[in-house]
Length: 397
Image (cartoon, rainbow, N blue to C red; front, side, top):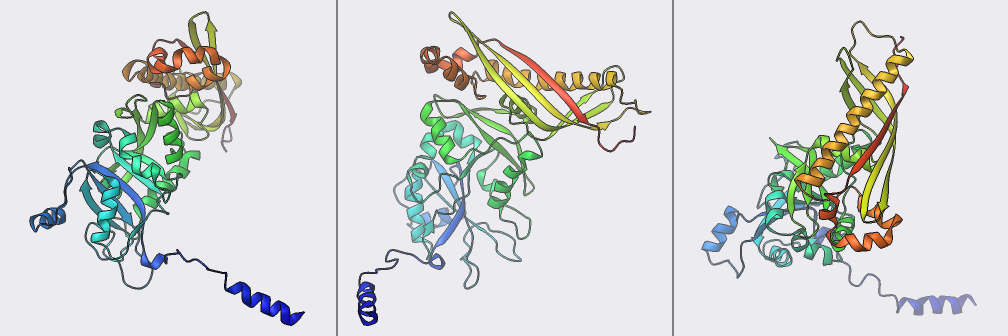
């Protein structure tokens, strides 16, 4: 029996092919970030073209890939902007053209290790480029490529996407930094829920307007600030919501899980700050004949974190009631501000009102969904906001 099992095991080895199509990661260029900018050929491209190294294309956009050099062994050859000189932590390579797929294949002519997109983390598209071309056009190849993860984060940059993928901080990889900022949503309600490729594709396929987190860059440092607004019909950038707008939006959607709400106390006008601990929001659609309206109900609990009254006013029930009413008024103002931009400035709906109408009144939704953005701009919205201060910090008063 033992001899038979040995012979059988040996025979089975003949049919084991192993990873016949595998490629060692040491033989590949792993890119973790992708940036898309308005076309601007690099000096290297210009010099190569002068020597006859050009190929038929239109200069529509410039693509930047952020490559993480392999650990140990020979470093990547530097041919564009890179990380700190003390130790190369990332490399930004650029090419210009009118086809992202063709650009990726062109990299094979200048890199000894082919690009691999299995570890793509962040895609940054410049605001200027997404004004000219729809996100559907710009990301068509990315959405088709099976090598690229649908969980990749999509951002929009106020300036160049290249700048958002650059850093002066020694040892820092910009893509990982940008990805990490999303995890701070529990500390502030000025960060959008992350928009992945999969979520973005769903929005574009449905024809809904959508938002992308906006990133600003100054002196090599990056900051999330507001969001780019994209029209559902065109999939193009049409404007920006600022940080206060995102706060108002978070109250409407119920995404305000953390952060600070600053206001000024009635009567004396001193600074008061409320820390958000939890938020519940409900969008209630109402239909009467052909008339549609919405009521937004928001309830939040939090902590009184700053009170600049001097001398400090005792935390009586009457005083706390005044502060709660003031905080509720401040949150309502933020909600009304972002609603004004949605309904009158940009005429888009990006807060989920249509989804609630679809759920509760599917027949009505079928009638209005085709021109929902325009319809929504005329719909009245009312609010009911309640704030509850449950803690006063470690103050002894």
